[in-house]
Image 1 (spheres, rainbow, N blue to C red):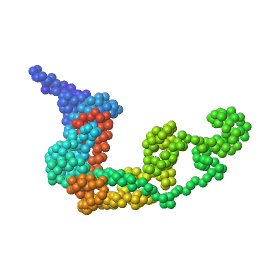
Image 2: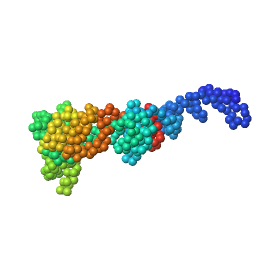
Image 3: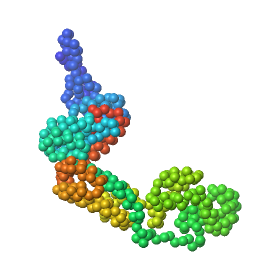
Image 4: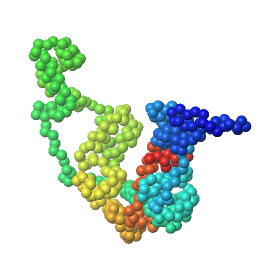
Length: 467
């Protein structure tokens, strides 16, 4: 063989074969790290396009490559991503497990994250216990498995990594407790009626001073302010000698509005008759709506459906506006009872984060229902166990819960009892699945970026290899 010529700007030698029977006429010299056989790009350009594909996928990656001056199709970008080698990460010591949806409500997969390095280590195409067990069995060095309380993850971790300590996530434990607390409060919905504090106990804001001019509208009302401003502007222009037609053109008002403002001696003359004392179609049904409100019906749509058969010809908006005025009213007689979700929120929040009014209303609710007072004690003692990592106190918390008359907490206690060791470890050890939840949000972003059309192989490459 002998050299023939250089290869353009890269100065790669091109060799020709002198043997006539050789099927190869010329052979191009390959430079490691720069070129490859049958390649039209340098390795640096190929790796750059692959990085763009990992970050942006197909169409968006092709558009970004065109900004770099490289004309490439979306399919080529995806092929470069799929051709990347499999990542070889060391076996984790602490692994987090959770599910992600490839098609929400129908098909789910499993993501595994190294809790210590905060990097995903693998994606599984399903969430079966057997798949997780097989993956864990190949990595005997795993010492801790962080998971939620799903039974298939518990079974897979038990079979695949019997030597590992399973840790239930604290956020999921608190979420389960909040759902159980709301069920308990909903079961005592009748105890919430009549628990609003008396007017003497309520904190009232100072009332606005009455308008000294005798107007039915308060001083700061937008209608009163606009009317007074327009009245002053019109009379100022009249005093300057302008005609009413000129004032109309200058202020952009209708001629009728200019006449009304010009004929009124004071702005207060225009206030009377503005929605004052006008009869409404709802007037004869107000007593019925007041009774339903006092009975605890605060749903305007339901009340409207009840008065339509009684002959009400108006629309739903009037009923909604009437209920809104009641809802914003400080009158303790017509004030609606708090909803179970609201009361559960008061119980679940730290007492110091409640306002004075919320503390007063919660105190009235608990004084009216001893079962909810017991529920509050259980929630706050569990919160202390969770925040102070006192998992050893969990058995003494479960025993009175099982014996008390709170069915909403019995299901929670039974579930914790079935997963007792993992829950105690979650309430004691510092590990949690918070890192995994962040990667789940990232997977959702990658799926939306590919319009939901990505296969498992491409999604796995982007999740594991993207920086």
